[in-house]
Length: 186
Ligand code: HEC
Image 1 (cartoon, rainbow, N blue to C red):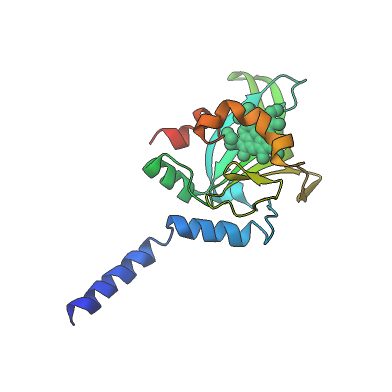
Image 2: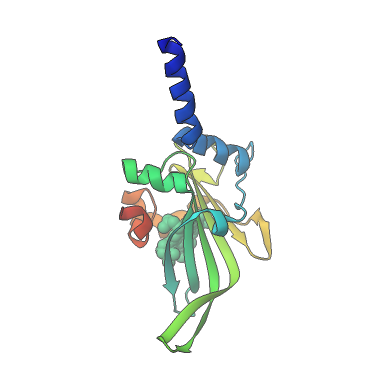
């Protein structure tokens, strides 16, 4: 066997064991979860297959975000973030809000997640793919889905529905990274 063939076999083996490069992530995201004109879909079964980044609990019953917030992403996103400190193209962040159960348990006064309420979704876009689409901008696609019809994005566009509240996180690419131990500690 000559050297070139050997090198090619080694490369093929490497690719077979390491299929998930960053560009695979982008092509999977943009072919499975985003339509041709930028329509964002809620990923299915992310609780079973994605990485849990962290949780927030908003206990104030009058607050719009009252509930248990769990945030998930793909394992490739976590790896890329550990390597580069940035969200890779095609990263998807899902924040699932569930209603809050609470009561005194043997552990103490406890809060836990119950029924589904809404899902907030952000999709990283380094290429400015959907210029003019109100759900895309500032390097992300932005969407909101409700439990009563999880197929319809009910966001009115990211400037109206999302950006104002995310301004405190602008320096960290609009993401509240301090709440995600899985991302920021290796
Ligand atoms: C009322 C303020 C508010 C609005 C409106 C809002 N967000 Fe957020 N969002 C937050 C805060 C604060 C967090 C982190 C803390 C928490 O969940 O309590 C967050 C977290 C998230 C996360 C988890 C990743 C991260 O950035 O930390 C996603 C995804 C998200 N928001 C998407 C959206 C999208 C998409 C919209 C618009 C459709 C939106 N948000 C509108 C305040 C808001």
